[in-house]
Length: 216
Length: 399
Image 1: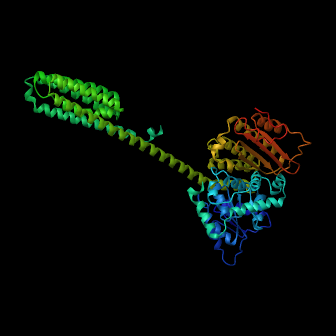
Image 2: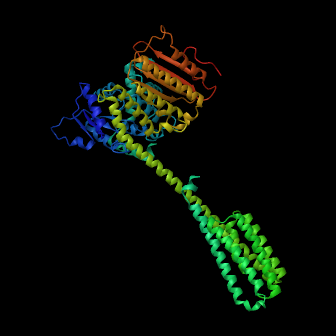
Image 3: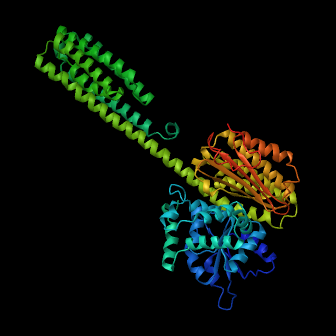
């Protein structure tokens, strides 16, 4: 995998956590997405790119996500993101979001989930999605509603709610009285509802969510 | 408030108006001096009396002009005093002119001076009243004492009105523009301060905080006390740059942030999830007693996690239903057997007692090896809690 983070100390920290996990190989740790492509044809092609949401200031780097997603799976990290930016990253195609402050095992688990094609729904991400996709249009979710995200079903909302409280998928499943696989299905459906169909729409969504007036 | 201290367009306007009053008075004095000088031959030897009147006018003008320039404004009561003096001049000049010959010089003088009343008096009614008095003074002096033709006197008396009213309107407009300019400058200054604060926050966030947070988690710092300290400071700094400290009505958020910082010092990383209650409106609906009860309960819950759960992380989530705030504390630690193990003092008193006293409910889910889930539901308003308390054992007393 590759790490893209403009902060050298944070990059080092992530690298050492992932290296300690043993079964993850960090092939590149760079400051900007552009440096990734400089690696040359002989370089190892990373399966997962861990991408810091904010490089060099206040603007989230949403525009590079659709491009990176063509060839890689993108896991967004950030110390803490504005909810609208995080939602924008997921809509642009990212396969998950974790904060840099997450427990090392959680960080490693997120990388594994993304590498195997899953959706790394951390409790923070669940909380943010729950806030941004609120059914009440007066609440924070108006931006998402306006951008045409299909509404979540009550069960999907419930699953999101439990995961936001820190429950694992298995714990959420037992609380909801369903199987673990059913919760996984809910999570996949949430992801599917967030992702939009084609690349043009992806790019449009990224730009739309980046507009200062359009996001909050 | 700050506008008056820091920005001075309003003060500048007052000074400009005061200077205008002084200049008009200078013009009036010049006018009276020229006319009197040209008619010096008409006074038939009574120059001393005329000179005394002129000296009185000059002295009064000197006092008024000095006051205006020193105070950098025209005060309303000065205008009232000046009005009385001007009426006196209108009468005295008429008497002098009738008795000793020479022109009635007071009228053109008073017409020029009248502009000052429009500037000095703030209310239109006061300006109109002053003008009526002035006109009456002229009617008495020019019409009665000096016995000028009635048609002249009436037209001359009316002339005062456009002078004072136009002066009043212009002064009012200038003052309003001054105030608006001050307000807008003060807004700009506040905006600039906010932007500066944000810029600093971002720099702290992007540089210092990231370093501190990494150091607080890795193996780079061998001294555990120092490492805990760094972790605590990092949480504090995060609260500062993210502004949870001062979120409006978000006193509770600030307190939860502090509790998270304290837990970090004790080696427990707490994820604080509150994206669904980011707007201040929901938290503002919570009264201070309930807010304090929640914070106290959360504090105790985190202490329990630190002491008993044997885990390095916990998730603290704050969310809301239409009528209640729901706070959950979850750890994936050791858990305990709720059936065989009686609730400890902390859980019974500090959490359940505190919360139920404020009308809330507490629910605990735990089992050995399965972590601990604590859910506190606190109604936003009295009486609303019944339908939302999902009730642990011995849940709530009604209120």
